[in-house]
Image 1 (cartoon, chains in turn yellow, purple):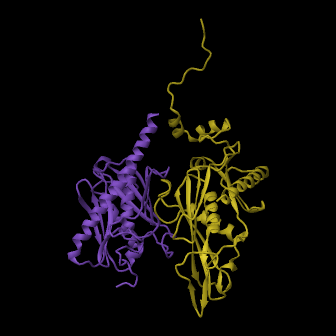
Image 2 (cartoon, rainbow over the protein chains, first blue to last red):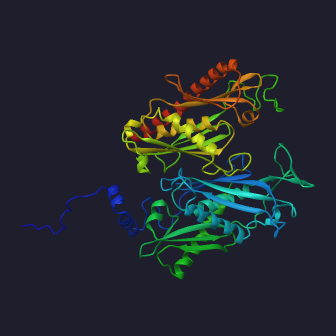
Length: 288
Length: 244
């Protein structure tokens, strides 16, 4: 008599997509144990990224960035404003990230979500703390008038890792900005009319550095590092690490949030990989 | 009378179009991976993105209708889309009004009885504004609804027309809109020729109304041709992919 030593066949089986819905974490773990991710990337892989400049003609500078399924549009508008009393020669930078319900079914209509505010604030701090722009460049007349740059990021399609995409779009849009030269005359700021923009009647922003970021999530107790998480990966994984570096490889911002404790060696690895990634991204942005 | 000359002596408009000429239309569907249906539409420099989510479970139990779906429209204007930056809050009356126009346009056209107890969300995002937002929103929403596979009795095609200085003109841009021109937005069901929405907010002599309306109707028919082509191309593309 031939005995079947194989395990008894299960009473029922699932299709892969059903299994994914019932046990998302387990489904995911099976992939990770093989060293790949469900979308076919390696653990270290970033999604295909594209950058387009000048997509909005009503804005002073604009850019659209796609990172896989995440698409953001950033528009910069310059407006004349009165400077603060304690910094009479400095302009304003006001970044804002909008995660409206159009971009994913995960977002509800209503006031800006916590995630949108956190992202806006993170970008705000990177721009100001690492002095991307000398705010004195935005001065029109000391104590009277300065430029206020409204940097609005609209997320059009959300598939994870909004911070990387938003920061890249902000930096690209800032590099794309052209503002007409103003003249100040006794309390009135005049900006010349409708002729074509050229080097004589407009100026570009002088960016001191271009910080770009790379984000990673920590999966499970094995603490596997997954680069550039998409929405599904973000919702399964616990801890998230974002490293922002400039072109000289200096760290401009670093954040580690959520559960899943990490070690200095993991952080070191993130920083190294972020340097690589930001170099690639920077090359991509300069191609055009 | 405005100081800007909107119509040249040769009868050309400020952007070089003839009075009965539409702006360049670019349209695509299925642009967003997250939404059930989506469309991107350009009328010249006006750019609109529409996303449809649903039919899905209604957010508020109290709103559920036992015999049909509810349609919810949210309208959002990107802060950088207009000439002057203005932060539009969610409760801006003008935005709510626009959303309600779009909602009322689609309620009789979408076969809501097929989707009892559910909700269909239409989200509209203006990315760049150069006049004719309402028409662009309605056209984009139509394509997004079709892309989402939601049953409708017909296309809804919208077009604006107005009286520019001494002639009726179609598809007004921002400069024409903002310089004291009367403007009518018409949304039409091209198959039956029925009008589902007509919207005018300024003075227009009653004798001129018919001419303006017939021009808007012509525009709606042209819009239908363009939208239908986009939808058919997309369907053929999908069919070809499925056959492989």
